[in-house]
Amino acid sequence: MEQEKLVDILLTTYNSNTLFLKKQIDSILNQSYRNFCLYISDDCSSESKVIDTLKEYESKDSRIKVFIQDSNLGFSKNFEFLLNQSTADFIMFSDHDDVWHLDKIEKSLKKICELEVDLVYCDERQIDYKDNVIYDSYLKYKNFPIVTGKDSVLAFTRSFCLGCSMIITKDLKEKMIPFKTEVIAHDWLACFVASQNKGIGFVDEPLLDYRLHDENIFGGRSFRTNLDREKSGKKYCDFLEYRKKTIDKAYFDGAKMCLAYTNDEKYKDVIDYYENILKSKYFNFGLRRFFKYLGYRNIGRRGIKEVMLFHFPVFSYLVYRFV
Image 1 (cartoon, helix red, strand yellow):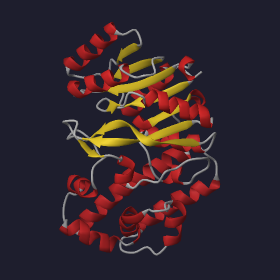
Image 2 (cartoon, rainbow, N blue to C red):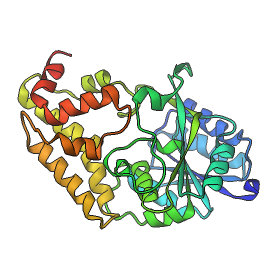
Image 3 (cartoon, rainbow, N blue to C red):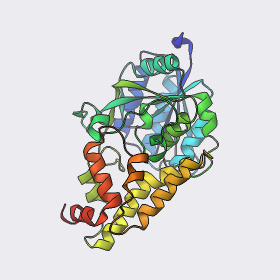
Image 4 (tube, rainbow, N blue to C red):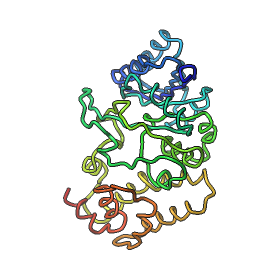
């Protein structure tokens, strides 16, 4: 029975907002599924209230294990540290500022056991810093593809779900670590490695509230907001710098990370495609490879924005210039 299976939940902190942190931990402790361990690694926070909060929770519930790092590891290494601590057959990732719905573990575990895949993810609601619901479906708002099954090129070319929405198997974890390269997004890597092995499943309902607030780095925000945060000038050379940074961060760096985990020649052509795109300063008419590697049903406005940014930057510049 699923109730007998141990689930490890991994959560990292660094100078986290303690109000949000408490809500996140409380939502985990209140889960309908009780057989879990919560591993928390603080990456040498300078704010003592974060450490005090974690130690208080640890003292009250034996399922919580807190690690305080002596020096700053950085997000990637801190997460790799927690993956190494985990011994359970199933693992879930948690942000430090979200709210899990009461049945998140129960429904995620049931689905991954039913499908016998390496990874299952779910939808999420988006909330603001006051817990008000902004969007009932984060995936629909972002117009992300729903990727399931095995050997999907989309698992290599783009990030399509959040780590906090996942449950993975121990077998998948052991294929991910030790990290073979700099891991910029553990969720992206998990999806790709799962796609190359037993595959990916999906729970078609929100099982958590994903929080948007001023301390978010990039995810969850609108195109306009991200553009305002990233742009540094209005000249064409400024736009090309912004364009390279955007393609690198949102697409190319993740693909290079995944390449370290495969010898399949077709993925090298994706790398060549990204390199070719970044060399194009005005136009690139190689649209076939965009639709081959990045296209999906109902891509809609997201596809238009990406095609303009990748293949017609001179037109995309007009949006950059006047937004």
